[in-house]
Length: 68
Image 1 (tube, rainbow, N blue to C red):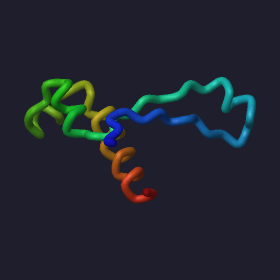
Image 2: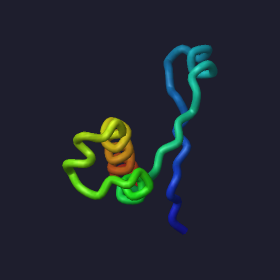
Image 3: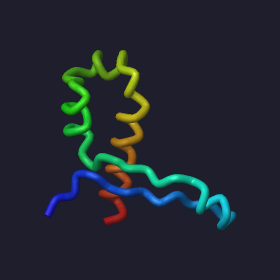
């Protein structure tokens, strides 16, 4: 089964901070992420307000690949 969304738990060495921070949802497929935002080219991505989110999603999905 392929999971398209992953829940990321916050981490901090301070346990009280860990409870305060909120969880994050990540798309595990950057192509689907771009399609949902209607980004079809690199130029559109560079000019998009979501470029940071797209890079974060890509890095997260690559890290998941390396640890599995």
